[in-house]
Length: 324
Ligand code: KG4
Ligand code: ZN
Image (tube, rainbow, N blue to C red; front, side, top):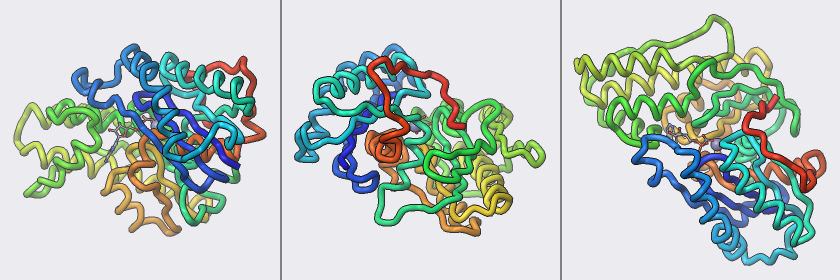
């Protein structure tokens, strides 16, 4: 079964084609990161306009890269939420038009579920129950996946998402946007022991909080007692410590058979390495290019949602759509 997946929930116009939910046939991403960099974050209206310009060329490129004709496809899957409403609308309307013109079923996908299924795009697939840490620019969710499409929300951020914290810390430290890769690069330059920045444990809760840490980075930046690489490293250590400690606790509590990492922050080397070391069960983490937003992960999820996610042309976007 060949599924074409469309993703436009934030600042990537992305289309991928996947066979049987596992085999990546093509994956084309037009990133707007450089455009939003000068504003220090994603500007929703600007994102929608650029999606409009990019969507048709990106669809054509994905079909071309796959050497595939519309007639070869079995379904069109699309992110219908959560995300920026105007940005989501561009992808959704493109998907509706293709579904109608090509006479293929339309499948509605939750963006977070898409991130989870990036872990299915490999030779071996994860088992259930799995603890999933979804950490992106808009989300920090700890989820128990008990089967395909069966999720229990264990915890979520009470303020900033993990990626948002990276982006804001990078801005305060003058490192540019997107902040995650910038902080990771800068932290590698630290020559001395980084300062210990605060961790919000919130008792036994699986919830997260990063706003206090963000404030602390601001204070360290103003005081200038430490060089920027050391502050960046201290920030990264704090985020990774909290994410890994809470994830490992959830694995033990729910007796998970494996742990899955997904979302843009899953590209972080320290997070991948620390979780791999501390997890009592096997870790799955997508290759770097499948951690950040892409269409292949939506196509992979579309295979498993082919029936339950089936939607009509009256499908609307959902800016807010909890996964469970
Ligand atoms: O999943 P994604 O592409 O978009 C959303 O759905 O939000 O995630 C983007 C986020 C940004 O906040 C970016 O700073 C962060 O992922 N990110 C990273 C790294 N690469 C991207 N954070 C930490 N370390 C990285 N290497
Ligand atoms: Zn995302």
